[in-house]
Image 1 (spheres, one colour):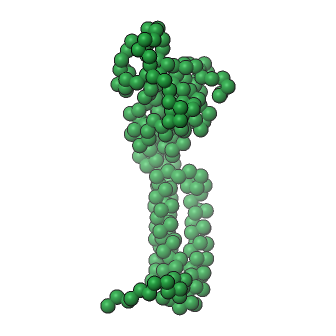
Image 2 (cartoon, rainbow, N blue to C red):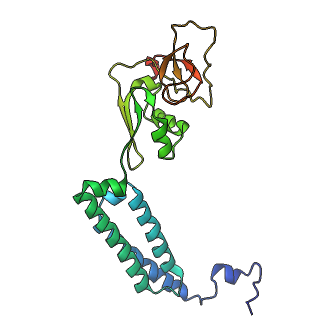
Image 3 (cartoon, one colour):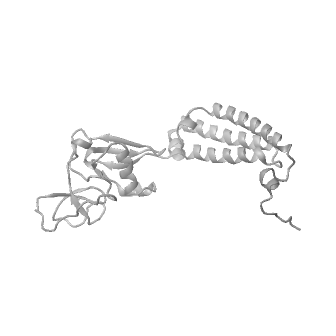
Amino acid sequence: MDQVVVPFDWARMLIGDPPPAFLWEILFRTVVIYVYTFGLIRWIGGRSISQLSMVEFLLVIALGSAVGDSLFYPDVPLLHAMLVITIVVLINKGLDYLILRSDRAQRTIDGMPTWIVRQGRLNPDQTSSRGMGKAEVLALLRLEGISNLGEVEHAFLEANGDLSVFRAKQPLAGLPIVPPHEICPLPQRDPASAADTTYCCFACGTLQQAQEIACRHCGAEEWVEAKLPDPALA
């Protein structure tokens, strides 16, 4: 028969079923596992700490589970936890070795950069393949000080999630992204506008003339007037 749980049993809530002396064992377990894990992390090296690829992210999750359970569960032997931690670290070290020795292994394990902006135009196919929407990409560009897609010659989403931005030597007219469209919507194309006015696709920033209906790159039909970057925002 299951034990009846008494609500607000302060002894159970604060100390639990083990005797109070088990607190000293928790202290001992924490020190042992912390020192052991710290030594293994130092052995892995700085690469795994400075950036979190999928491999390092999995390492953090696996170590967190193995380390955390062994700190205060009395039925988890320390040697078992240390064996799990060692195996996880060795697997990570082996993957690091493959990454350093083989470009093909690096592309397979870490992934490849994604070309998300080219000469002021977004690449919706590439951004969607990385699970990113247009708003998220524009937010990353704003964090890099970009106010208009016309300022960007190339932008890459690196395998570790960082954004590499190469500014155009001569900025072109393009899609303004400051302020964000969610805060200040851009005026859409006026049907009565002059035929020689240059507009840009609201979805990807492609430049086209006013008489064109659908974007030749993404098929969207929303257009805004292309603007030159504001020097005050540069």
